[in-house]
Image (cartoon, rainbow, N blue to C red; front, side, top):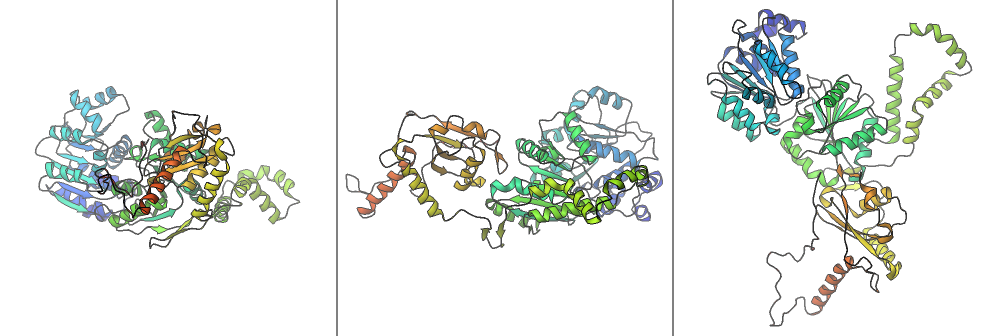
Length: 619
């Protein structure tokens, strides 16, 4: 407590700090509190979430408030309702012995009239989300022309969420003579612009380095084939029975689908995404904060501003597009000095993106092997045994104990333990009895090898496919389908065949030509199987992307293969091969009628295969 006093805090605020059990200020508090209390500088503070930022600005600002002046004196802006409520709750705890200081929170999703009435009674501190505050300003329901301090908490998050214009409007309604304290985990260009345009004589405090994660977080990655990402996720969760985590996905459809699959597999979880109503969002978050949910599956937008303590893990089911988003994700764990783990599940195509994130964060990601069945079962059994050993309230069981003893009297200790384990974990032991090794080994030199069965040499597979297609004769007609995923999403012909075999209701489907482009794919299915083929894939996800499969209408649905067993789909490449051979026979180049070189279209690349109409939609 003496250390907080040395920073300049005194009186009733110091008593509130003592009640909260604070003994030693965090680094950000130690640097920021004296500046806010004693200097007239504007301030930029770069620090990760969970480092004590709320107390860093809240304690000194509460001490500077004059309760006799019945106006809004401090304005605090935060990106989300949850963070807004958390800040308001913390400030009320800090000012426990200052009942003359009134703090109110205004945010969307609740009755604005109730908030307007509270503001009319007079408040000293307003904690607000930008959108709701703009609404109140437009209604003339709040006056911020007398504030002496404005705090922009999670400034980078607010700008990422599109509050640029709102922030400009709000700051234009505040007095020129004020201090602005900008708190941010990262320093993108938009935050630098805010600091340049609105802060005067600014001072910068940095805890750690720009855009770098907290030192309390360790970073790990698992590299698997794209189709094995969900199975890998499930094994990671099962292998950490005490896990309390957020799983981040790229889209709301991913979040819904993964949460549904985890629930089906017996894991307590729920999804948080933009389609939820405020009441549904509150219900999910209340269950997660109460730890009735083991994991929360969320998109970046839905999870922004969440303030949840004691997360053990953050799992990146999809890597984000930018490093700032990864920094925010990983910053949800390892807070308040506790250790945390940030996990990335990647396929081989994402190795370059992972290395770029490593380079900017200046942190090395540790390669981990996907846990096998034996490792998972041992972890679960050990956790179960620890819970039994730590169980309490044994005295209340005495009145029932004799009846239980009578039922178990013929068992030895070992037999009783085996029966308990079999009863509790029978399904788990069966599920992981014969597990497949999902790992792709990574030796950090760009080499990788799949330890599973890769199904033989590619040339052998191609030869078999050609033999199969010729063997079907000239009576097979084919329909063409498109997929919204391609090479950039990690799709290979083997993966496509696996999806067809796994999700199609029909068996023995004939597959013709397959062409995989960067962002989409085109392939053939025999017409007998094509009638309801796309319906089977309506809810299938590949590497976190919901599959969109469409049939391409064909002018001549009755078209048959030629006498060599080739369809028009594969015939194009055959004709190109024949043209190349003819060109080679003429000395390696084709001549036009005038004897000159035949020119291609401007900008054409003879090495690049022709594309079909591409559909690169993403959900």
